[in-house]
Amino acid sequence: MAGLYFGRKDAFTLLEVIFISVILCGSLFILIQTFSPGLESKQKVEKLSLMIILAQRFMEQIRTEGYDSLAKKYPGNESGSGEGEFKDAPGFRWRVNWWETGIPNLRKVRIKIWGEIEEKGFSPELEVITYLARR
Image (cartoon, rainbow, N blue to C red):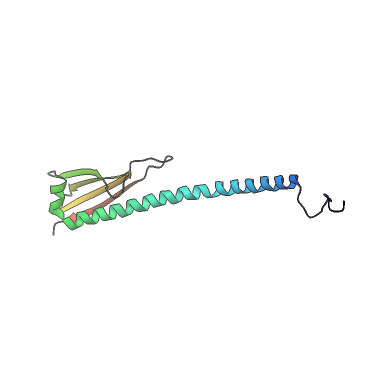
């Protein structure tokens, strides 16, 4: 009967294992709650960064096409506008407005970009304004 000794001092009891498991689960829950807002912020920053890149690219396309092309693509006498969506960035739309400034051969151009999907009260929107001169 020497081999059937259950009172070993170096083993854990069931109560100790349950207690440690509860502490570990609670700690894990607290860590998840701590990092969750950081992940949401990261996603918002990624969307805003994408919108900035889209706005820069769109504005550069307008500058490259030039002053006269602006009125052809987005018709109007003293002003014009157009709207659409980005094919390479689903969920994001754009609107272009332009108008004469009163200074000959100078137009003001506004590009607005926004996300179609609102997530947890966050509806990203970006507006960029520049001037375009006839060369």
